[in-house]
Length: 298
Image (cartoon, rainbow, N blue to C red; front, side, top):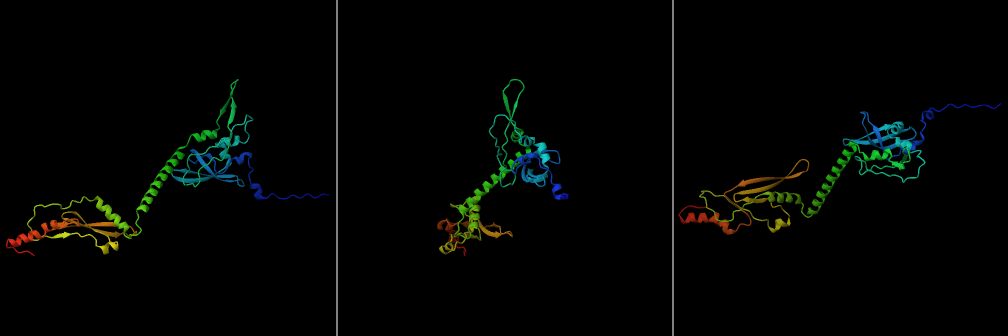
């Protein structure tokens, strides 16, 4: 008498859902329509397919934020009937496969969204003797009409690319202008930029002298050869005939350098391009005239 052996069914095997024959149409990288909790339907990209547990992970971008969720395949087939109809195409004449590719990437994903599905179009024959009319599949219609989420994502992506290009151009210009031999190049550039914005009006000709008992005059000299060799900074500028400006370099806590300008007023101020005759006219000449008038001068 032959014995009959009965083995209990493993709970792990019993929990596995039977896969539908068209489940393999859901592939990583294709774009499908999903329904959010608020009832809105928009496009999402399939990022993971689990055949063991029979669920699909999708991701999409909403208001600049990337979101994701797990969806049952039955829900995907309900909203994307083209995936189920692609399993058994109609026996009409063969049509070239359709490959679709979106124009830009979605959000911060490293790879562009790709349609990895070659789904033939349906051929439907109208009633009567009319010829066959080629009707595009719902996948084509889904691609032609972009959701507001996709349009907003593409707009943000274009703005980010534009800002990135501008930053690269600014960095390239700074790299070309950097003088590696001058350790004070950054401060020197700030001083030159400040001087370009100033409206310097030098004392260029004889003007009526004012009678002062005490007259204070200053004259700016250029850097000598030793200071130039040491790459010292020229921090003195004469913006007008009575003002002397001193540039002071300071540094914030965040290692950010900035320039602070101090202005001082005198009776007369002469730049390094002023001639000796001009300096004599406003300094020593009034003293000599006072001496000839039997006055006191120092």
